[in-house]
Length: 186
Image 1: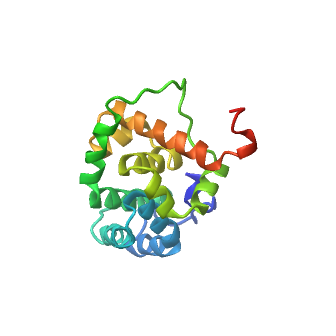
Image 2: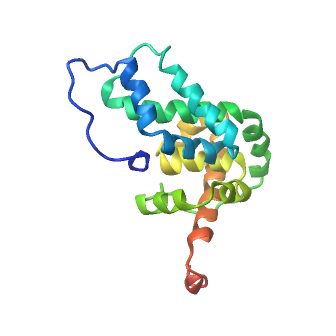
Image 3: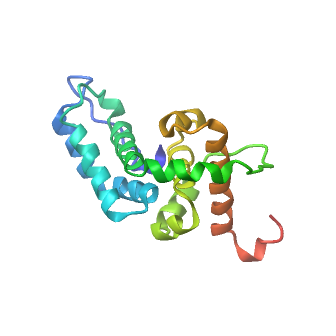
């Protein structure tokens, strides 16, 4: 989760559970990064903004969030809201992967340098080049390091299609950041 923000430790506190004020505060602290994540998933500025708002409204309804998991919870809640906003386009993309052939032996998670480079791209470029399923899996698995199985459960898409969409996203990532002088050596 290093892409989500700084690596500072949560402050020590009397209780292991975060207050609703602390939850709302972290939404403010990471609003820019939350918005970027939602925008990559939804490819729509209004839906991305609404996803952050919807997730922050959960702060008033959530029972308890363990303080050490607070930052992760905020990102997960925002990502889930973004997925909910575009669940039909995600499901519509699944058939694109029915005949997808992958020759990779592994599908590595993105490294911090790759995530930082991805964050510098125009989100509209990402949306233009990747379908909603590939974008979402890129964020959840590649950047957020959720398992392929967890992505499949969240998206309600068979695991094999999630893996194929991630393969597509990795190929796109490689093509997007490949040095043209090395194009024939990779």
